[in-house]
Amino acid sequence: MPPTHFPLKSILAVFPSIKWMGWYNSPGSWNVGKKFGKLAKSRFWDGLFPGPDEEPATFFELDGKQGPKYVASRSGSVLEQTSHLAYLIMRESKEELGIQVKGRITKRNKITIIKTQHVFDPAAEVETHEEELVCEIPPRSEGHALVAVLPIAVSFTTCALCGWTHDWFCFSMILLGIISNGISSLVIGSARLKLQGVNSAPTTLPGDGMLMDGDDIVLLLGKEEDVATITRGKFILEYDPWVRWRSSNERKHFVRRNGNLEHNSDAGKSQSNSCPEQGATSSELDEEPIKDEYTAIGLCSLLLVIQLLAQLL
Image (cartoon, rainbow, N blue to C red):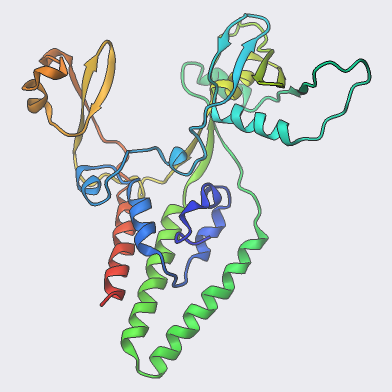
């Protein structure tokens, strides 16, 4: 799937080999460049591509949705909002065809029973008891990706015909579109999709409970860590270091209010001290380095914008 179709959501991550199928010229580079440029995190990239800083998984809509209410049957704990995985499970259960139970009909309710499986390696859980549990989700096979061979062949054939007729401007513009789209697909599609779980104490009760959304109920049966992964886990898109490369030592400034850290992107540390309306003193200010700047994605977005400007000449 080429980067020119940016509402692809999770396609590039779930079908990683599609990243090799973006080598063709297509319109829409301006919209794509502005869209993906928001992933790059620094003052320079925020100036070129303004917008909120989101994690890649949230940006591609692989995470971030709020799940239904959860009630634990053993401990009695209640979670008003659950994770993106719980949202997906509830949505899938609503689409499944149920079996009607015979008896007196009062109010129709749909109940789905799920017996959870052990996702993480038990040995890894013991070794990383105080750390976050993360497992990589294997990619799917995608035979339909070969459909992209057709536009690739058309783009290269058109580029060769322009060179054969000595139309070097069209030749260079088509070649620029092929290169910019191909590199962008390769960089953006190089992520690995992972699931981050939740550690639980060895003495915790079984995590049986219910996800409730109106007349739809999902019963979760299993160990606490498996159910907690559904209710509080999250999806992660992990890029290689060469994509997350940080080009500067820029640091984010935060203001501590009521024990919480709030990002202050418009002012530095000294400027924050001079703003009494922010209600922060020098002891309430904190900062941390920008770990993942995603410079490679920012450069690809800049290349896509340059492609548009060049083709407007």
